[in-house]
Length: 69
Image (cartoon, rainbow, N blue to C red):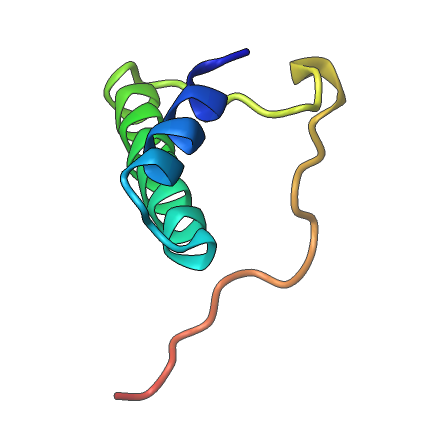
């Protein structure tokens, strides 16, 4: 069992309804992924993803255009 399973047991024992426990789980995961993204940005590289670096595509479409205010 990982930490997610352990927190699910704790939420159940504390009497949290399942939908609220699911929301707390999602909230904690969101904070974690934001912290990871921030850490990656501070290192100056791209965020890690499932695609190997040598297979990354580059945009070849229209160049940026000025958008009126």
